[in-house]
Image (cartoon, rainbow, N blue to C red):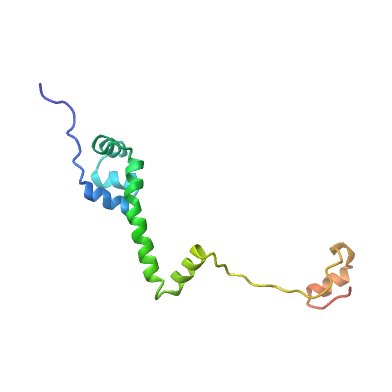
Length: 127
């Protein structure tokens, strides 16, 4: 008796691994293979015995490691990359200390309209 239905999609697993490393979405992968997302998920389940999410999660690690390696190398010559890494891995932050001088013991309601206008226009006002 002849088999019915479409033939199984032949997946190039090295290519699929590369797509996962590049963080391609399931939709993008399905478009490349000219099939549905469900088909990719079924083929991974049938061939590899895991869900697509599990398969993708393990394969994407190599891409993340490569990206991190490239970023670290780039930071040797690129100040922006070095700043990004310093903030994200070393906890550095951009801070500006601000000091004020003057009396802050009065509430806004304690000032007259004339005093507020003087302050707004750059004068010192009265305290």
